[in-house]
Amino acid sequence: MNKRSYQSDNTDKRRRVDISLLNLPTDILVICFQQLSSTDITNLSCVSKQYREELIHFVFNKIKCTWYDLIKLDPLSVINGLNRFISQVRIVDSYSYGEWQIDIFPVLHTYFPNLSRLLVNSSSSSNWLKYRKSNAITGLTLYYEAGHHESEIATNLLSSANNPKRISHKLVSTNAKLFNLFHLDNMPNLTTLTLNNYHFNWENDASSHLTHLSKLSLIDCTWEYPFDLSQFNINNSLTQLLIQYTNNNSFILSERFTKFLENPTNFQRTAIQELSILFTKFDTSWLKPLSTKQLARFIGDNFPNLIYLRLSGWLLNLKNFNSYMSLLEDNNLKVLDLCITDSSSSTDRDNLIHNILQQSRTHFPWMKLALRTSLYHSSPH
Image (cartoon, rainbow, N blue to C red; front, top):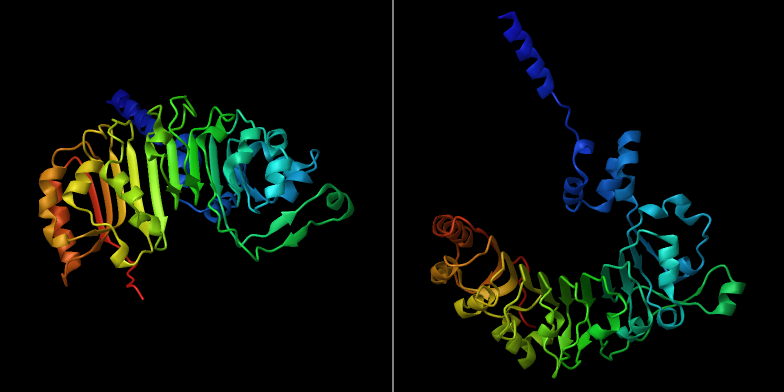
């Protein structure tokens, strides 16, 4: 009996393992911290010296700077030796001279040896990237914020002043910013691409470009003939695709976008696993109806690997949701996330949604249905 008691005590001691945030595997921490803001992570690192030492690479993995900051960096004291933790740089000021005349990539990779993601505030087309090369960049975001000032940096100005001259954007060009996938041929390891407010019009080409591109996000982007959206996926490498339009963007009313919705894969079977098509801050009269026919196009044979579908800002009559049940019973989805504008005249939407969710757990228990109505409601003026 004593022996049994001794073994039991040892077993209990072995089971008493102190578990804290710092004991979690790094992969788990990355997932957890994706749900937190930078401020939250910084505050957490201030809990103790141990937390600060363990979380330092999360606190300093992202920085933002101007073109002037990068050009004037002191290689002997780059951010007090913390540069090895930096994996993402965001250049916050739009500066067309710098894009064309200053090859910033050697500077970035010299000062930030672990850099893999770059965000550039650019008011220009993507042509300048044809003359830039990087094997280390795996994620690229091209966006534009007019509220940021542009740095006018010339060689004589840098040598004679402590700060660059600032000029505000009094006039913003109305010309479309053109993007061409071929401009990124010198970034062979790029896997993630985010484009904001670009226009596509290049011709179809059988050549292989960006063979590793797996995640594509297009925000307020437009296109015209002969371009087809499937040209981003010539190699069938895409696994995640996000398309978003905001603030009554008239492109969603165009024939080109309508044709995309009617045939989203251009008759090709894709490897896409996650698909998101979002309409944000639109007048109700502008919104696209989410018919059963339209939903079937997103979960049909051309999306055999699709497991996550997110649709936001679409019109849907909640009273008719039963007509979608049989369609959803035969699919591979694991998550269907719907944020819709209810076109019915129901006065009890909450109860209606509750009943729909209950039915979904019975009809397709393998799939999680998230259903809610949009908080943004606006009528045309």
